[in-house]
Length: 370
Image 1 (cartoon, helix red, strand yellow):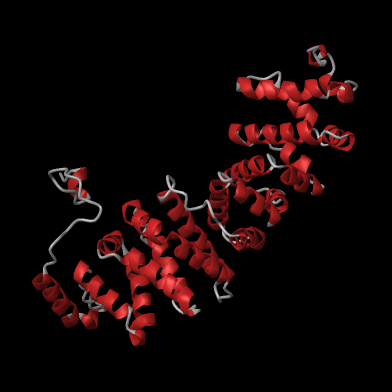
Image 2: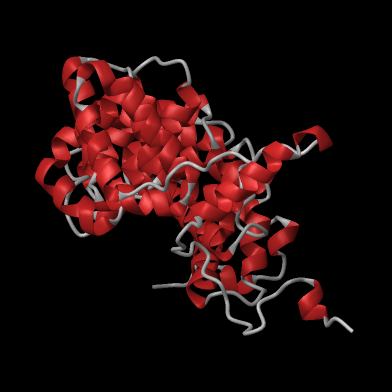
């Protein structure tokens, strides 16, 4: 009786076959099978096609040469996209041949010449092959200003497939920043850069592209000059608008992280309060999204209360349920610093909120004599 293993033609040695094995094709056997298919065509047998020869590093280097010949440029870059999409082995050869570097140079050349033909394909390749940091970092550190200017320019270009191009541009930019996190690549970003990234948030590109844009903004928050430029680009207002669309958890965490940084500035807090839904949308995130989102939401409200705790703001917090959420934090099992932060907000404004049922019995919240 045939065993279960034999029925399914599994190897008797039980060895695991590699995901992308380096096998030698049997061309003689393939030709014999093709000949048999041809002879039996009258029985409905289709001739199997001759497979394309596998890609190697030499072929990629030849394509790179063609890339810089004007008459072959568009055809070549489309071939590279197709090869990158085909399989992991192709992508490996492309990385070894230096395709990521060539694509960066191509994008910079397009920027200098004001040319958009081939940009979509170049950005697509850079997303397919996942640029390794070992290669990216030296290139970016040496030419980071020009590369970032080029990508900023791409964000402002009008092209047919806007959503794809701008999503890929943000993902490429995010990869650069992650590869060079220890450097100061984002320290001197231009006002135009932030205006274009904020416009990306407003235009609602792909979810992956939006998260990449938010990752870039969060990294940029490390420098005070960037905070000022982000506020001037109306980033606070657009982040609140984005959060009102009920995005996924990761997006919410990123939005609140950026808002937390921007609300550390007086102008950021003023812009926050200029949006009628700001307190409500942040209050909603205190419980129920994630611990990280809750932490950031409480810190935002803490800064608003500490520096902008007007009667209208405090009444709005009561109205939208923020006070109730803060009160709940003092009773549940959560991080001690978060519990202390919530208690401090309630204690600071106890006189204004003392008649609210949600903090009834919290006499310990009365302002303590200093």
